[in-house]
Image (cartoon, rainbow, N blue to C red; front, side, top):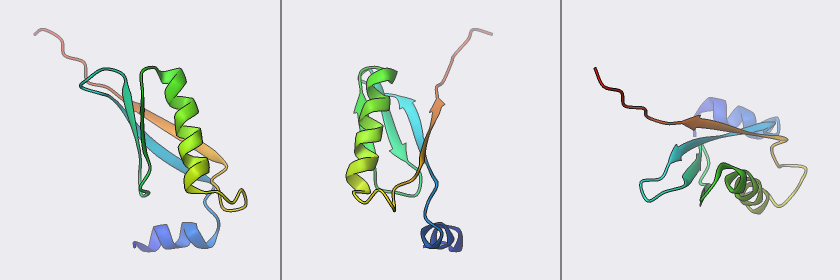
Amino acid sequence: MTDAIQEQIKHKMTEIIFLVENDSEGGYTARAIGESIFTQADSIEELRELTRDAVHCHYPDPQNRPKLIRLHIVYDEVIAS
């Protein structure tokens, strides 16, 4: 574990960041940075719900749960030259 992660654990994590990408089979995937949390959904709205649910499952104690969930949405766009 890095020093930064250990420091976050000591001071109760206030935010968790998910990397959101288009799924090759359609829909979206969300993977937490620095945690073993993953979910997928057909729409961004559904992904928001499922991400919140996954965080609540991973952190059942509200005292230790991050207060904010940040979705960093990344997509590739290809344009003609």
